[in-house]
Amino acid sequence: MKEITGAYFAGLFDGEGSINIVRGVSGKRNEARRSSWGVVCSVKMTDEETIKAMRDCFGGNMGEKYSYRRNGNKPQFYWQTRAKSAMAFLRKIYPYLKIKKREADIAFLFEGEITRGYSVRLNNEQQARRENLKLQLESLR
Image (cartoon, rainbow, N blue to C red; front, side):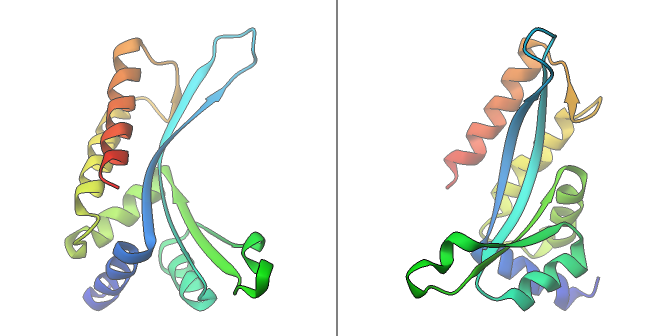
């Protein structure tokens, strides 16, 4: 990626993007349940071409939030990437981040917690470490 492209998307992400650590649970109610944790990076804005450029450059998904069309508002578009793709995105733009650099640092620490995959049974200590990183990330907002 060209330096100017990385700097451009890092600036855009600093202003319009978000980094989240999310948790889901898989498995049936009566079976042993697995925690599914991951990093999600997203950008929401009204300029569809910029969102398409994010998808073309970094992969991920894009779509439109139709609820924003009420009351004559412009449609809002989003781009999102998860797990390994989200981490690859953060590594590419990291040198240029300013505002979200501390959040990215926590995402990298979280990535270090993933040793056996994203959807596995965790012991209490592993669960607590991931929850702590999620709370640290949320406290920066």
